[in-house]
Image (cartoon, rainbow, N blue to C red):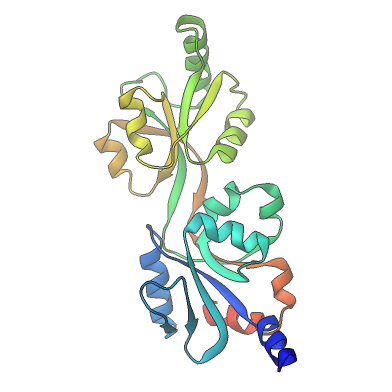
Length: 231
C-alpha cells in the first residue's frame, strides 16, 4: 500500500494556476476552450483536473508560480513572460517556455512625466539623470516592481546616476506623490499612462501569458501528455 501511495505521488503532475490578477481571465478562458474542468471548492488552495486524477491544480499568484516552477513544486504553469525574465537566473534557468499565448499582452516600458518635453529617448534620460545629480544633489529615482530587468536596461544604456524604488502597485502614481521621477511598468493600452500624464520613451520587453515547464519535470511520467492539452 505504501509503495502504491509513493508511486501515485511520484506520478502526480502539478499545474500552477493563477488565482488573481490581470491574467486569470485569460487562463480561465483557455481552460474552458480546451474543455478542461477543475474540481475544487472556493476556499481550497488546490483542486484536481477532471478526467485526469493524477493532475493537481495549485492556486497561487503569478509571481509565486515562477518561483514554484523553479523549485519544482509545480511541473507546468501559465504565467507572464515578464515575471519569468524578472526572476533570478538560478530560477529562470530551471524553467523552459513551451508556448506563447495571445492574452495578457503588454510591454515593460520606461515612462516619464509628459511635461518632460525634452526627454524622448534613453540618451535624453541619461542627461536628465546628470541634472538631478548636479543640480538636486541626488540620484534619479526609478519606481518599479521589476528591479532586475530595470537595472539591466539602465546599465545597458550607460545610465548610472539612478536608484531603484521598490513599487509593487499603483506605480504610475509615484511621480505625482514625489516618490519617484521615472517608472518602469507594464503598459498594455497606454490609457492609464495618459490618465496619469506619463509618456513612454522606450520598452524593455514584450510580454504575454505563456506556458512554462520545469526542465526536470519534462522527464516525469505524464507531463508531456498534459503539455499537449495546452498546445
